[in-house]
Length: 167
Image (cartoon, rainbow, N blue to C red; front, side, top):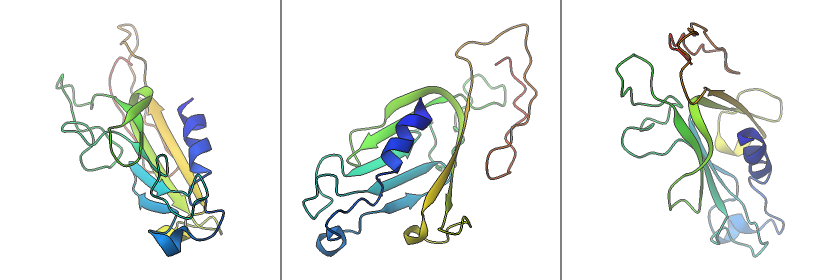
């Protein structure tokens, strides 16, 4: 469900039907392309600017203290001291303010990777034509009869885990 929600919004990144948003204000398109957070603008209502409600969108974990301050897609807090960061809700923020609204709960890791038109890693924001998204979700409650020692491989190929927990 989170991927479906994000995909619909991300497809609109850089939407500029009059090809004028860049002339009036900041260029419509990607503004942040991080591993654990992304942000983009669009001219949703076709009024030649990107200053209206819903024309700036962010995805990632909240930047509140104890969440994912370094924006690496790996939660910062290990409240129970087991060496495994506590999962966070994956969020969507509209307008660059107001806080992230959860679109998925119990997310252990997230990764965004950005590609250019040739399916090569994009080296600058203006080159981004597609985005790969990897999400590691876990159950809301532990299972005493299960031990997870799996190492997961997201799209980047950089392994996640093993987590060594009961989820």
